[in-house]
Each structure stands twice: as structure tokens, then as C-alpha cells.
Image 1: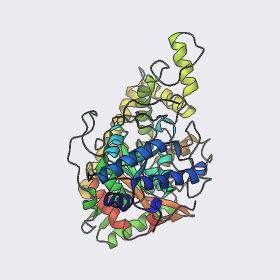
Image 2 (image 1 turned 90 degrees about the horizontal axis):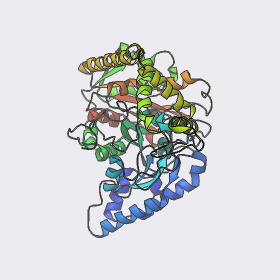
Image 3 (image 1 turned 90 degrees about the vertical axis):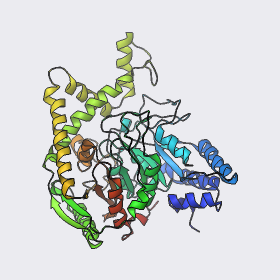
Image 4 (image 1 turned 135 degrees about the vertical axis):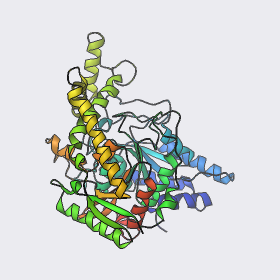
Length: 486
């Protein structure tokens, strides 16, 4: 029998619900795997054995009493450390929140618990989700399980690394400009960024509120569909969470590709995208056509301005959201200071890392009097053009196919002194967040022994179409079954 750490989410839940295995045994297997490998991967900032054992015991008791233990009964899950967890510290990868313990659960965390999931730890991330490699974490970088000298991507690098290293079969991340999909691509797993408003952001520590979205990371399309079904849906505590029905994503995934129209935007294969990565993505599109789809090149001209617009809008929102860290209400508080302004300045200088400080300054400048129209307003106008380009594309196509990351995983420190090169790591994922539409990354091959991700993009609230294409591709390949050589 395969070890529990190799089982899929659905297999764990089905066997736990049937009584074939105990949730407690599955939890212990996950905790043992974490102990065996996480000193090298550094995927988790906080391991939660007491929480995991208590939740697993509750699942086993519910099953023994004949109760429904939920669709994720006994499934170990890692949670990105910018999602609030009741009684468990939430650091956001920052020195400004070293011992912040939330008094409540984020909605998505509560929904996982209600579905029977077992939280084994809080995953590392770039500080306040600002980065593409997890190197911006105040607690040190996570490592890619495929090559420990390389980054796992970011900002949900810890979540992706935990799944790829088989520390947990599932994880939650957040995606502001590609922070679920890009690390999923670099770690060879599946990552889903839902439509903005599909999943509640209540309890997600905000970076850029009009761009942030919570989503799942898993080892297969089916597992990610099951996770999204659990966390999606209306939430009265989040005014941006839309009250629309949540489809059965797993059922939709099985519909097949026949008749599906695929658009392949030229702009996503431009200079900066490794030709080998582009070739693997185009080969994946050809495989989908063999399954009954049709494909055609297309153009989204406005996305060429996306990087510039994003790095005005996101820092502007960050500058507003991070104003709450003033050394007064919670988090780190500087010692010696001169008055309230001095306290705030010292606290932020000591608590925020260089990348966060830089983005706050950029955002504050873009919003300042005399520059708002020249920068922020113009960036929002570009955002509208990007959305219109996608709307026009979805009048012709059901799904768009692109690379997720322009390259495979790069080495730790390789881009640390080149901010532009680091930001270009998200060039293929940013447009989706600017448009507020869903996308996912799934493995489509290897280059130089490292995973390559295929990004599938769908129209707003059409995640089922995206899953349909992804599942049709996955079932004809074995990329998702490959194990990182830890």
C-alpha cells in the first residue's frame, strides 16, 4: 500500500470516511514527513502538531459516531501565513508581526476545518506576499524540492514547496499577481487563482485589495477542483465576495475537450520567455487539439503595458493597507522613539523589509497630490483596456493557453540584485489579476530537469471550463505523477 503522503486528497478523504484508515494516522504521517524534510525545504514557518492531532481526533470521533466528517475528512493542509488562524501565529513573513496570534479564522480556513481538513502548518511566503521567489521572507527563503539550490517561486512559495515535497497533499495560497500559479509552475504542481470575488478574502491579510484572491494548490487537477469547491462561495463578511452558485468543478472537469476553442495569445510568447518553455506549452496545446479542441493564435495588445500598470496599482493599494502597522495596535513596536511619529517611523524601519518599504514608497508617491492622475489614474485606465482585451478574446475562445512562468526555477540569489528581472518572473500571470478572471497552472513537461507550467485562463466565473481543459490534458500525460527527488 502506498504511504499516506502519496495519496490524493480524494483518496485520503474517501478512506478516512469509510473507516479504512484513521485521520490521526494520516496526520502523523504528514507530521513525520515534515520532520524528515522541512529542515531542507523550509516550506513551513510554523508547524502545528497539536492543532493537527486535535482536528484529526475530532474527525475520527465524528466518523465513529456515524456523522458526516466532510469532503476533506482527514486531509492534511498547509495554510499560507498571511491567512488568519485562530490561536496560531500569523506572521506574513514579516518582522513586524513576529508573534501576532489572530482571535479568529479566515473564512477559507474555517471552511477547510468544517470540511474535515487537518491543518499541519503555516507556510512561508515573501513578506506580505510581495515577491516572486520567497526570498523576501524575513525568516529566510524556502527551497524548491526539485533542486534545493533553486527558489520555489513566490509569494506562495512555501505552500507550493510543501505540496511538492509531500509534506501535505494540499495547501492554500494567495494570488495578487501570480503568487499561486507561478510557484505551482516552478514546483511542478497545480495552482488555481479563482475569479476575483469567487472566494472570500475575509481573514486574508491584505496586500492589494482589488487584486488579492485566495486559491488552492494540490498535486492534481481533480484535487484542486475539490479544494476550490470547499472554499468558494458567498461570504457576508466580505463585501467583494460575489453571491453566485458554485458549480461542481469535479463533474465539469470530466466533460472532455470536444468542441472547446483555445486561444494562444502571441504576447505571452514574446522576448523573455524561454523558447524551450514556449515549445512545451505549444506541445500541450497540440495535445488538447488531439483530444477534440481547436486552437488558434490571437492577440491581447494591451497586456504589454500590464507590468508597468500593475506596479503602480499594487503598491498604491499596499501603501494604504500597510498604514495600519504603526506600532500602536498590534505587531512589533520600536523601543526608543520620539513621539507618535518617531514611534511609527522606527517601528516600520525595524519591522518592514526592503521590498515592502520600496513598494510602500512607490505607492505613496503614485497617490500623492499632483501625481495621482499621471500615475494611478492612468494605470487604472490601462487596467480597463486589459480587461476589454480579455473580454474580446472570450467572445471567440473558451479558454486561453499560455506559459505560466517565462522560465523554470532560478537559483536562490540569482535575481536578488536585479529587481526588474525578478518582477518579470510574473509577466505571464499579472494580466489575469488585472482583469479579475480565473486561471490555473498545471505541469506540462520538464526543461533541464525542472518543471514547466501550462497556464489556462477562462472568462470570469467560468472556472469549470478551465478545469475541463486542464483535466483533459492531465489525463493524457503523467507530468503530475512525477515526484521531486527529495
